[in-house]
Length: 87
Image (cartoon, rainbow, N blue to C red; front, side, top):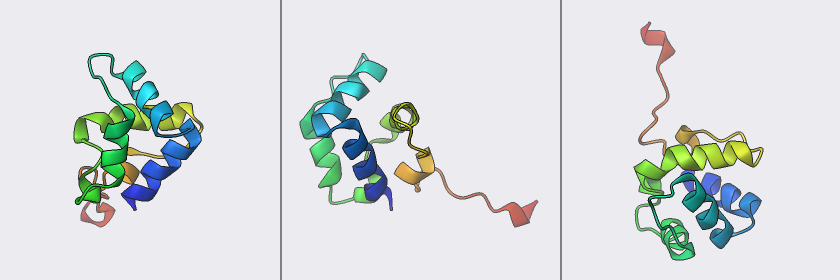
């Protein structure tokens, strides 16, 4: 589940504020705060959080933290599993 992947990144980063700071470093044009991360966790549509344009940065942060999470883990709606049988 996407929310569990987000929670794993938050925990490994050292909390919501720490993750927001890491995102700001990856996306300097954005001002991401702890409240944004909190809103993603408490969204009415958790499968649509975090926002799509943050997923590549979060994937990079996960890698930097030693986690093996992909964009598909964070937003399965944006990164569907390929059907290899169709080949």
